[in-house]
Length: 588
Image (cartoon, rainbow, N blue to C red; front, side):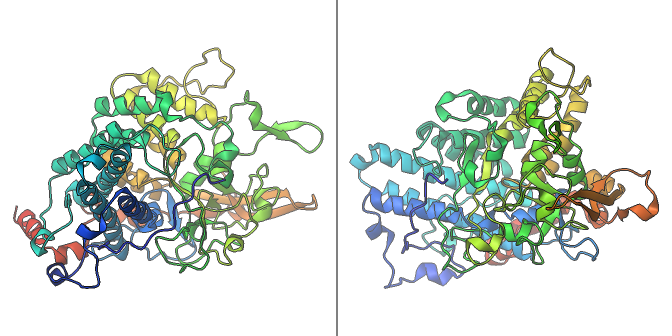
């Protein structure tokens, strides 16, 4: 279970949100304690650092559901009703609440990190020589860099506001946009400081360390297309034993409570200290609403934000080829022998499928016994508590509160990012090797020609082009799914594939057919129109056609408007410098 529980967040008396009124910065509030009188020692700065970690709990930063809709990974709620979701239809704009809330939440990280940095810099010279001071400064600078990296990665083509200090007056609130190049230089300087000064590991796993910093440095270079620079940091993450990272081979530890902070975890948010008395919508409490938004119907999943895997993703997981030489792929056939699993170990870990009769689900012996399938023909597993309870509401008397941890970065992601780097720098075989390491962990058939090992191979001779196609449309999305910070949207944006992808998916039909499985008493049960297939050779009366996905996205997506999120209206309306920047760009 959880090795580390965050300290109960202290009431930080300093300003923790960017004020909306200039007058507030000018007038003195007699009820506030000034920064000069608050930051006395490393105990005080550690309290401030705890508040920085607390700001990371805000799920508005990650916008998991909105980002899943905006990409090709998920469908919003019911397929038999026209969707009005602006993210799924690619009709969002800078007034969208999620876009404004996300910007505010990201800059709250930056604001709090700057408070800690200012506090640490105000301490005496002797204190600054202590290891604890360096560790705190490394963490604070990492988070300041992370906030800028996050905003740069998803907003306004990377041109955002650099906030490197707490504003001293109203004029310092009004800051112009910086170029993407200047923003990258700024957050990389913070990441480099953290990389060079933080230990390889902290005893407290929830703390960021040098391995996390190396991962973010490599990711930032990858996103810029600087593969040679990126692979240096990824190689460090993959091979440096000081970090203690290893791919998890026991797949039952993936996305389950038993696997919290496992050897593959690089950066993981700990929601383990569930406080049932907190408001259902307190963004800094130790729970999320993600289980409610993604769990199986009938087990706590629901509401208008209920989100399910898209048709292509479901079919891709369901049809993954197994390695018949991997003993983990064999299960009891019920008559004294064995048979191949119905679906792959990766599919079983990531999503719920009606034909997954080999995996327990919500304390039932198989998935179809625990969930209802139909037009919702699959469910994400990442954020649900399906491994420990029979219904989501049992943990906190409501399905709105889930203590499930949230993985931002793990080693499997790094393997595939490094594979892309190797592919783009001429090492095709090295890239295939890394992809196959991931596939072997899941018991999947490997890529390429037979090499004499005890594995099945697909027999394909890959080129740089065909392997990159597979990485973009199969290996990366199926491995990273809806984890992390906007991984799929950033990938689609930097690869320039979004428009063509939506058009292709809109033109592709899928079909739901009946699936028969054994009920709890062993008698056959027919789940009508519950199993998805990609097959046009079907009798019309025996299937339900799925042809509504991504039609609006294919029509409305415009890379200039939708590859990045627009600057939110809250910043445009309250920052004259930003408004001037935008007017200048319009004139050009």
